[in-house]
Amino acid sequence: MEELFIAIKEMAAADPNACKLYISHANQLMSKAMNKLKRIEKTTMAAPKAPEDPEKN
Image (cartoon, rainbow, N blue to C red):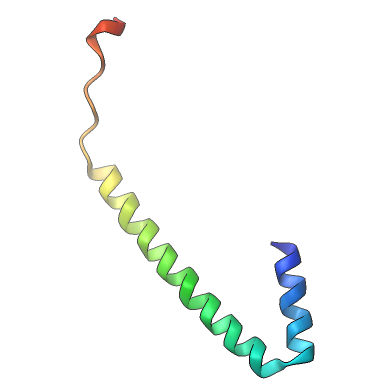
């Protein structure tokens, strides 16, 4: 991740407008990913647990 942040800082120095656009799109992507992860987490936590295998006991 640190390498990505360094590259973004270099992009900001070379082309601030392109950097702003890149950051905006990256934020949208991360926001969508976080929302999807939260939905998956909710459904996984709410799902009933599989019964234990009676053969193991």
